[in-house]
Amino acid sequence: MNSFITLIFLGIILAGFSQEPKATEKEALMWVTVSNMEGVPLVGEKIEVEAASTKIIVSAITNDKGKCWFLLKKGETFDIRYKEIEKSRDYQKIQIPNEEGLFEVEAIIMYEPAKSYTLENVYFDTGKATLKPSSFVALDELVDFMKRKKSTIIEIGGHTDNVGDDNANLTLSQQRAESVKNYLLKNGIEESRVQAKGYGETKFIAPNDSEENRQKNRRTEVTILSN
Image (cartoon, rainbow, N blue to C red; front, side):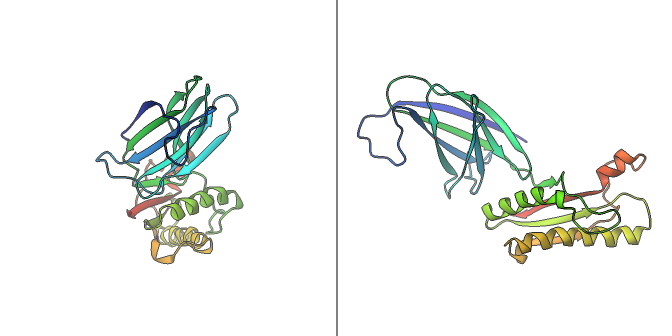
C-alpha cells in the first residue's frame, strides 16, 4: 500500500482565536486530513492515536472533508494509525512539545485503500457453513467498517482447498459466503450493499500440497466493488 504522512506544526495560536475544538495550555489540537494519492478526501476512515506512556488508544472518524481531530497531551509521544478492517496500520510517531502556548498540529495521511481483504479470523465448523463464535470479533469489525463507509458495496467471497468433490466445495464456499453476509444483515447492513459468491477451489493462493497451504486456501475474502 502506497502511503505517506506529513506533520506540520502550525505554531502558537493567538489567544481568543475563534475555533472549535480548541487547543489548551495542556493539550495540543491535532487535525488529521486523510485522502487517496490523488488528493481525494476519504470519508469514514477510522484514525487511531495511542499514547506511548499510557498505551491508551483514542479514535476518530473522518468527516465528509476527510478530516478528524484529537486533543493530545503536551510532552507526550503518540503513534498515529489507520484502521483497516481487522488491523491497524502504523504510520508515524509524533512528539507534542512541552512548551507554553497553544499549539495546533496538522497530520496529512495519503494512501490507496486496499480493494480486497482476507478476513484472517473468520472460522467455520469443519465441512459446514456454521460460523464459530471466535469469528464474531472480526465480523463485528467488518460491520463497523460498513457502517462507517455508508455507500460502500462489497462482495463476500468464499474459498476452499481442493480436498473432496469439486461441486461440493463450490456449494460449501457459497454457503459460507452467505453465512457471513447474513451476519452483516442481522447487524444492520443493507442487503443491497453485500453480495455473496462462492468460488470453491478455483482461486487458490497457495499450492494444495500441505495442510498449512490448504489452510491458506480455505479463506473468506472481502472485495470492495464500489465506494
